Length: 221
Image (cartoon, rainbow, N blue to C red; front, top):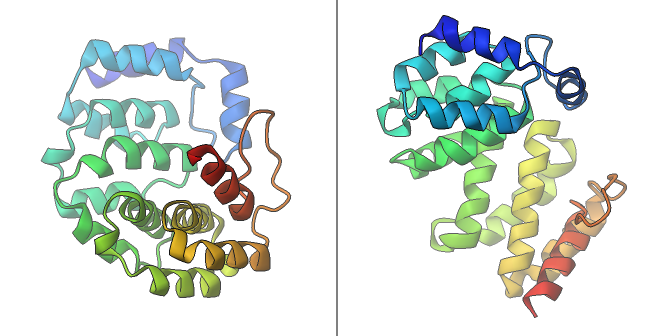
């Protein structure tokens, strides 16, 4: 499919309720409001098409970027290109998809993680903390957990909202997966109170770190 054909198809799938939902969570006006299921179905038909993905991303359209992520080949991205992708998107839902489907598939995530953990760009820092959360769970030897706790305690309350979300996730993962540091993680969460009053739908776990940690530990047992 050509770029023009894809954009016409996306426009035809636009949904007002989805547009309202996206806008509520930070998306800009340049969107059609396509349902996630429809975007996934289009991606299945197109399969991997890296050049088309880059062209879709360059439109800056919300729905086009969701689709671009699903048909992109992370192995074909240069180091400069993946940095540009991360820093060019402010909508958290797209940023999280980019992390899940593209960044995690990049051949050298550790180099990215180290750079982004020191970045002043909020979206790069957000991605850096997401990668660090993954290390906390699966590759703890790559991180200094006491140093991370020190940094979280110092920076979490004043970080940009985009960074705060993934930094808080790192705090929760430390408490959930590393019992020797659980008491301190809980104490930091209580002290800072980030997301203490966050509205949560029925059946979902609160992002408030002490509740999140205790619930996940309870499920482990």
